[in-house]
Length: 131
Figure 1: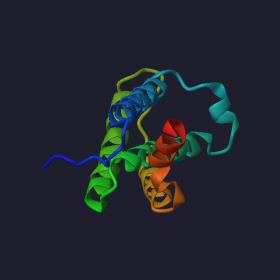
Figure 2 (figure 1 turned 180 degrees about the vertical axis):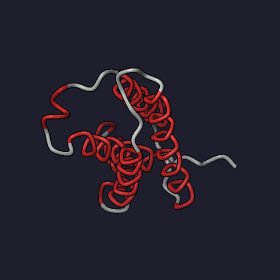
Figure 3 (figure 1 turned 120 degrees about the vertical axis):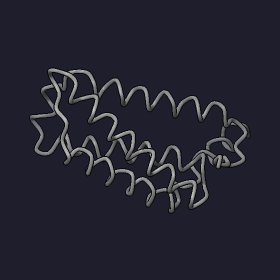
């Protein structure tokens, strides 16, 4: 069953930017980790939570239904799992269950934020830009 997107005027651009966000996250996940990440306590896990919260919030702007957002959250977790598998195949990264848990927590947080005033951010932006 296909997901139905919200009625956004610039849906194609929002989707394109979302795909670029996914590509950026994948690229950052597969490059060697910057040393500053290790300098901050739990910096790696904070990065996972924030990144996946942003990803979930982004797609929650496009797909507003509860079932659609659930699929987005599951897709975020599946993406996190894929990243961990790919990291296990690199010589300079490693797969961690705690990273996947942080990804899932981020997806939940993004979903919760989308239930509040930020749940219609793209619509608000479109109204402001085209006004």
